Image (tube, rainbow, N blue to C red; front, side, top):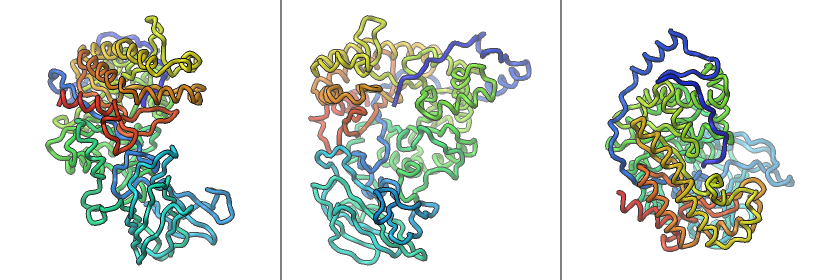
Length: 540
């Protein structure tokens, strides 16, 4: 998700060479840089834009309404340590194995997790009925708060009824044999026990993805604030829940192969070269050979809200790329991205340099630094609307706390009118400015994220009137025409694939980003989703 951050200051440049602060390339360093540049795999021949629609996938969580897996234990909350008589969540630390399974319990201690949590306390949007609970080992599993009813039980298997009225399932392990501890728990949606292993994806989830050409997995891979360095740090299919370290690459590849959509991967900011080589090897061996894939270094390294911003600045300063921390971070992003791209199969990888939509100067710096554009296929930006257009006489961002009093007095139609002004004003200008940079360097322009971004910032986040207005506006049928105009502007600017943020989320004061509010919502009541599908149908 895009958030506001400082812009990147300018750098002194001469042609393709660079000079940041007082650090000037020496003759030897310049020669070394030239050798690296000539070692680049030539960029793919720039083709005419091929607009199309993609989507980001929502972060895996117990409260997510995406429901991607028929085994919903894969989206269970990490274990909560409990103790009889103690406040909720204040039990002693749990003993876990390397995959996260509880290996032993102290007297009166138990481990609890939450599945299918309806955090909004509205109508539950997960399947009701009889779930199959499977597990290995010996011990005792039950359900807290009467959140599910055990219909039948046998060693390693239960049938568990989840009622339509439930707002979540609270599963707990109250006893486990340290010599054969409970592990490999699966909680299978009704009707999928026989096929859960061979067909792990929820058919409804697959159906709703069928209109999208690209799937971006930034959230699934827990890219933001990632501390993953080595290949051994990565998520594994055997992890007890994929909320712990993210969805394993093997599973992401399986989804891409199943949907035949082009996957978009994010390499962790701290990842080593060995990680990148192993990553590339897995894609080469498991990804459908007919599929290309986008690859991006981290996510929004310019954004001070994320730890990768500090990491790239630190590394840039250590390498003396600039004396200015912000500029050093931008240069390191460009440098590290191109180092990563050189280790990938250029015949399949769409090597993508991501920038800040509101700062086309940063786009220019990233592509120019040490001739990075020679090894780049696409420039990626996120031209959200609800942008700041005060410089051209507009209202400004609806989400800005300084505008909250005025916005609170508006109708949903007035909110949408301002949204349309943003679509045809500041958002379109961001598209055009970055398209000009992309054209200058001979690369495609893609959107790694985008859409509306009406969500209160700072103190405005807790304004209930503002939040309700934004929710109503997002549900308005007028949002369909707003999105269609927005996407038409993208095509007119010369944009290629547009990857919307995001597929399925509930609407709250924190944002209304989902094209769908819940997985089985029909397009007729989801104007943004309908617009994305219609645009995709026109641009297959």
